[in-house]
Image 1: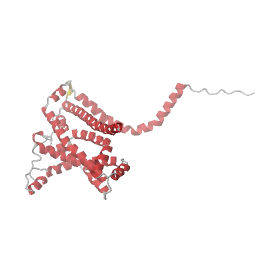
Image 2: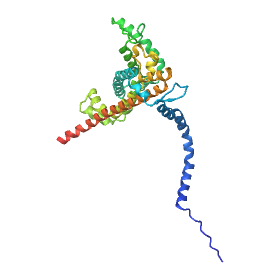
Image 3: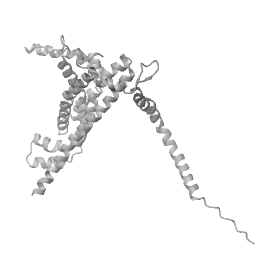
Image 4: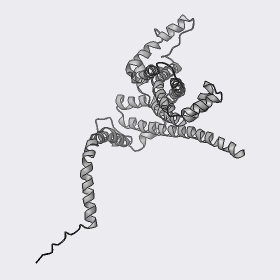
Length: 324
């Protein structure tokens, strides 16, 4: 006589789903543990300071005593602070003097490096080398090169029979010197980015342009620039953010004073002085968030201008075809 064995009861749907979730957690736990150090460090040294600076911007704190809440007083003083607006003006002037020539030279250099020339790798390393060179050391070198009394530039101008220029003692001389430092440092960096974008352009376009009889200048303006618009937009936005955050060049070249008449006082240098020289961390945080808003607005404007021109250029051939 045989006895029937009872079949094991199948788990219910909620229990099966819970089991699958636990199994997925066990499988993914080692992965999460492996990447957790980055997120922990970012939370401690990145996210927490950002959130804490928002709180500090509404307070008056010298870094040691009690934190007193003052509401919008820091931002109200910011709007009437002449030194802050002077720093804003200096920053925008230096940005204009440096960013436009820098991106133009970078695009031209990338276009030339993209051609079939000898020693291409050597040129790439040479142009990128300034970006990895210590900016502190190079600021000292630039201070010697553009010195009013014994600088190499003024010595060369004097030898040519031209008058010397007070580079580091006049307002425009200081701004031009800082702009030249920025151009020297980041032209090669942006050229490498442009070169990567050029290598993604189909060679058929260049071959067709050459067959049609286009010269080098026409190929550059009619083929390279239109195809590079997304890359140019990226470099414009990053250069804008970097230009508005300028600190190392004026600080090492001119010190915390910003030079004669505070002509080299940028927004970040002014914020550094308020927070870490005057120990007014509340006002320094307010300046930092004002800089964030300025950079965001300026980046949006640049994006709309560049992308708007790109869209208009794309619509023009379609309108011509429709008229035909």
